[in-house]
Structures are given as C-alpha cells and as structure tokens.
Length: 312
Image (cartoon, rainbow, N blue to C red; front, side, top):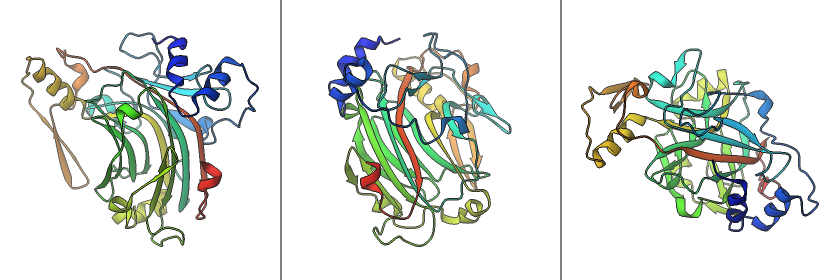
C-alpha cells in the first residue's frame, strides 16, 4: 500500500497542492469545511471488507490523512475479484467488479441538480482499463441516466439513456497523481433553463467543457416516466463492467488465449456480448491491476439557477 509520504510528493502537482500539503500536515490553520454534503450516512456500499487483491486495504475506507476538506476523504479500492450484490442483483455473477457508495434514498425527484466532487486517481491506474467513477440511475431501469467514466485512459461523459457520449474530457496523464475537480449541472426536465441550451453543463478544473454533442436533448429519453415515479440515485466509486472481456484481451496479449463459451447480457431490448457471466470462478492466467481512487469536496444542490460561482 502506498506510503503517505508518497502522496506528499504527488500533491505538489495537484490542484491547490501547496494548500493540500499544509492541510494534511497541519502546518497551517485552514478552516475545516463541512463534511461531504453528498451525505455518506445516507449511502450504502456495494462491497465490504478487504480487497481480494491481498494488499490488506479495505474496499472502502475513510482516509483521515489525504483530503481536501473536512476530516477525511473517501478511498475506494477495486482489486481482481472484488464484486458486490444487493437484493435482486449480483455483480459477481454478472461479469462485473464494483465498490460504490449508493444514495440510499432512491426517490430523489429533483429536476435540476448540481453535483460537485473532486477525485484523485492513483498514479498506477491501468490506462488500458475501463471504469465508471460516478453515475445516476433511476429504479427499475438498467441503463444509468449518465456516467462519468475513465475508459482506456480518457475521461468521458456517457448519457446512457440517450446512447450518446462526450469523449476526451481529460486524459489519464493529466489526472493520475492529482486531484480533478468536477462541477456538473444536470437538467432532468424536458424544458431548458434560461442560462444554457444544453441539458448538462460540465466544468472540469474550472474549464467549461463542450457537452452539446451528448446533451442537447432531454437526458431521460423514453424513461422520463420512470424518473417521475421513482426518482434517481447518485452513486460514486469504481464500477468495472464486463471484466471478462478485458481479462480475455490481457490473456491474449500475454500469449495465453482462453476458450470461453461466451455470454450475452440481454436487457432493455438490446444485448451486449461478453466472454462469461461468472468471471471470478475462472483461474485467469492474468490479473486485473488494483484500481484506487479518492473522493472529497462533495456537494449536491437542487437549483435551476447558474450556481457555478458558488460551487466551484
């Protein structure tokens, strides 16, 4: 597990790195902000205990040394074989790995939402891997409304209900080893707000990103009625879908191709082909590299006004 002093060196290149160093070392008196306003006490997590990667780290923990605000940041660790389940769903038998915190009160009916959070990507993150870092879902619908993903070394925003995406928001070399700050406005209604023509406005590290290619129409698509009845649920952490495809490819690249029967993940009238629904029962000749990410500085506000200056 990475020693704390290594993070001191990495923080020099982070956003506000000098302030961060003073905060974690207690050298300067910095006012403690309120703890994460995307309330952790109202969340449940999809995986408990230590990672199966054998590093001795917990899948989820509070890091009281490495942080931006308050008393702690939230650390997520996803190793080879880590998967969770809840009533009616099992990641372990659905070709997935996951360690997420999930908003327990699913019936959040806000039509206009602001999300603000910062995340720190481990410098050793595998640039050939794929993972979701944050998403919003509505109950009873498999497809998320949106997902902020880090796929093959590129940060992107997927509007899953619209089957559209905004790619190349930021690259891994510019994220690994430093904090990335996100401010995001999502309009879940059909009517546009006055200050933007887009249904999503996104700022990354203080720069507004172009999102019209993926959010110039209502984001709920044909599932607006589901949102109206069930509301939404915000979740964050590390979610890795279709892990068997990535493991199979890594085995091929290592010269150890495997014979697998294949599996079709059928839902919502369409199908995704993968290698197996039960990847963790297989003795793979390769292993997925451990993924680590920290979250802090988290806020969620309901408003149709442009609150960017207040949330940045």
